[in-house]
Image (cartoon, rainbow, N blue to C red; front, top):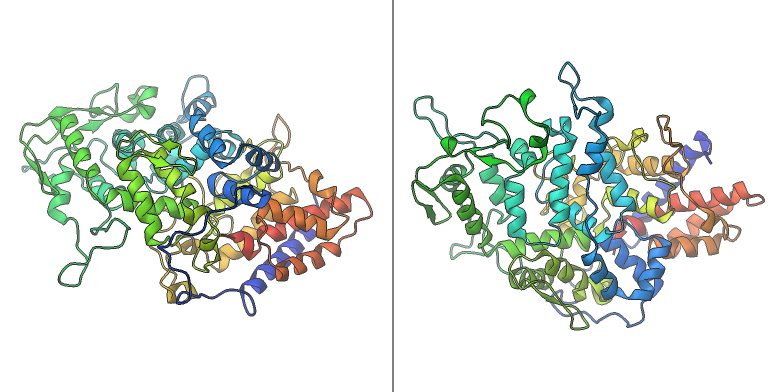
Length: 586
């Protein structure tokens, strides 16, 4: 059912007015940092009986969005049983789907060497469909979170090779509940990372030509993927030295030494300098091969570690990754970012410390006493258990603090809409609006298309000039929130809710067709409609000011026929999903 464009624009205007109005003036914005409870204290545990709103809230944190059926199922199973079931599900992967979409000869470039248009978006199409339809939701969410730490981007030369992006996404998906050390190895040997951070075919120094090893990966594996720039306490706060300043972990000499380690890697199944056009198909999605003739065999020194002269390439990488992985910064550095992606943007120090302990110990006890994790340092199943089951995440006291919570990532808002209203198919190949949602006039974010290796937003970002800055709060998603994106998101979600998004003809028929029948059935009563929307979308947090405005708008739509009831449900979903209570997940 496609509603008129005039109505679409009208709904956007109403939605935007609602969002801006509720965010300003007499709303509940502002901070109460001085009077907030001690963030290191242990909040009270949740009630034993799981309410539907609590189930929806948990699924908002742990999946790509709650569905009515999954809320019911979680209430029946309980949090722990659902969580353990998710850990056991096999991974839903992307590479096979992408390769099946290639021409029969396996070619992905045309005669002029340009990407074939229908092939370019195969990885992106698979990501959207998997995020929305796959049963292993927790694994997919973890992989998406990891993709924003171990960043590669198709907004680069990788956009020409969707199979390479899909292979990388599969590495993160398969390793989402594994060990971070193993993930570092897989990432280091991945063609995607080697192309993106330019160490593919990185050669040893040549004093005759002045060539030196590329330092890109050496710098980013430390700064962004593992340790960060400064020494951290176990709660993620910087170590302050006797001079009153922060302690830097490495300097350029360390980077120069580490860069020598990542020399000699090239595509597998071919020579070191094999022309791209002559590479075997599997080279684009197979682990790299070390060519010791091109590897630096001289002594390598970094982070107070020395790799002896004559050490081969693979062994040098093993020693380097072991050295980096052993650094005490890893637990708090990675743990804090995962808390930000799942629960809250400015986590309490005690929360970070407990997650770091799970990283270091490789195990986490669930409330029932069941242990998650292998006991090996870096076990990510223990880490995600700590993130989701910590009293800060599940208790009630923390969420009462105005400093608690996070802006829902734009990608998660859209996938939540698609899951909540059970689209008939999440096949994205014919959806022009989903080919690149990174523009601020759309979602402002697209999976695996960040503008740089620094991700869509920095984990330490503080929005200048606002209340969050006054309180010293990190709020990463605010870095992509601006005057354009504030309008772009309501327009984007309205297109899909009213089925006005641009599409190409599909032999299998229309996709992303939502089912609003569950809500149209109660839409004759605007209050009942808002109750249902509030439960699933905002888990019972919709404030009276927002609710009254939405009821007023929805009640103005005629409800004398099925089309009017359906339209009420669609407009209500738009207005709730652009309300402050929805945008900020608490």
